[in-house]
Amino acid sequence: MSGSAENATLLAKGATADVYAWGEGRVLKLFTERTPWHANEVSATRAAQEAGLPVPALIDWAIGTRCNPLADYARTWLISRMWLDSLEMGAPEQVRLLWRRFWRTYLQRYGELRSSSPEALLPWQIVVATASLAWDRSVASTGQRVSFVQAALCGAEHPWLSD
Image 1 (spheres, rainbow, N blue to C red):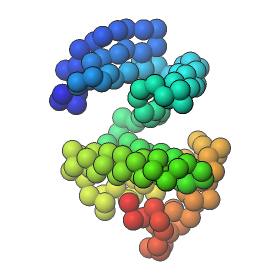
Image 2: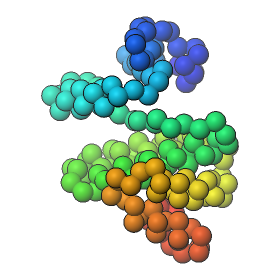
Image 3: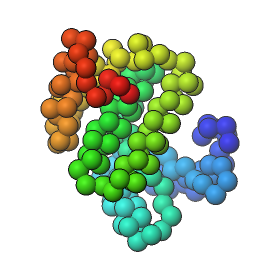
């Protein structure tokens, strides 16, 4: 599979999403628009997963951008950091290790495909982390985001700066 939805085979077209064949034994579900049904989709997928059924990982990237690709990369990085931090509050160690590995691999591969350096990404990480304080105050990592921005601007150490 080339990694491009344009080359994937359309399997089904629904009211809010299209489903494509995505490699051997996998599918890709692309939502055509953001609707209130997304919450139901997430709940249903989590319930199926808890029942032991094979389901895809949930990655909700609802606010992509159409500017510098590093802005999207920084937002994906921030979502992964906030989500991984939330896992530290009770998920089994094996689950935390698998998700850390997944995000590390995903972000590394994205960086390779976009030929970006950590130095080029850092300004976007600062912008996205700062902007996120306005668009998502419900996530417990508000303090972590503020301390990241302060550390990044001052050249201080912070756990997120080691990503």
